[in-house]
Amino acid sequence: MLGLSTREAFGQALVEMGAKYPDLVVLQADGTKSTQTIHFAERYPSRFVNVGIAEQNLMGAAAGIASTGMRALVSTYGVFASMRACEQVRTFIAYPCLNVTIASSHAGVTPGSDGPTHQATEDIGIFRTIPAMTIVMPADEVATKALLDQALAWEGPVYVRLTRGPVPVMYSQEQKFALGKAIQRRDGTDLTIIALGDMLCWAEEAARRLEREGIQARVLDMHTVKPIDKAAVLRAAEETGAIVTVEDHNIINGLGGAVAETVSDGCPVPVKRIGLADTFAESGAYEKLLTKYGMSPEHIVRAAYEVLKMKK
Image (cartoon, rainbow, N blue to C red; front, top):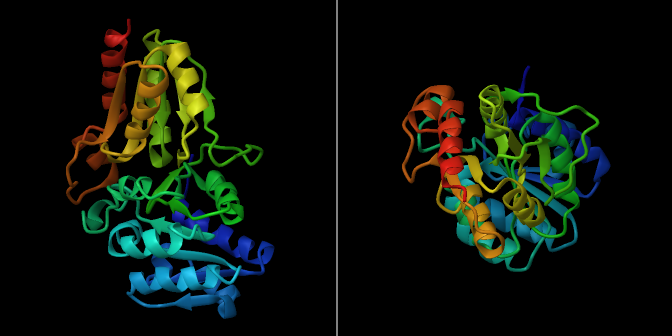
């Protein structure tokens, strides 16, 4: 069942968070409708600041507010948060380890026809290298609301990555989430597919196709890329002996990189990374882009067969 985009779920959840956290201040760099902070702005105008198209100032202002002990949440597109304001995030938010939540919209190729200027396909890699930064990407609207709450309660900066378009509903309201803890969606002994955000539904579709061919694939929702759930990754490596990672991001320094680093340190097994193969994507419909750039369920199935051949 197709649900809300995670940015829409974020906008709704943010209003609830405004009541739960009376010290929460939301800052926006223009585009309140696009990022859905408009709902918070209408409900809590005294705790909302739109700095305009000035992402560096956005981060600096958030750092100042957080330094007083209040909670600050900034909202903009992922490309601008991770590149235009990178130095301000690194030096003024991460270095003093302030409680700032950076909510970024339009992750990966989910903006589709908006083109590469608005497709955040390097943001995880940029922020993974910044110490103290936590990186989260919810898979659906239920996960978005739960993980946003935890991000706001987290000590230190958190980068939350959101989709532009709608995504399937993957979770029931009863599902429990914890930052840094993967969720096992399917059991399996032949290999493990580890997925992130909007790619979780495609990973599960690939697992269902593999099951019809007699292959049992474990599926993990690695909603927190950093700190990654090392225990879950190593358990998957030990118990299934092969891993495919699936992310809507450059394969360099994203989820696949984090998983490969983890298994190489603790339990070396074959790993295949599904994602953008170090290229910009072109403009186009979301699902067509997934197919063109090798991120469809069919490509995940092919990668599964490749790692199975590499198992000892």
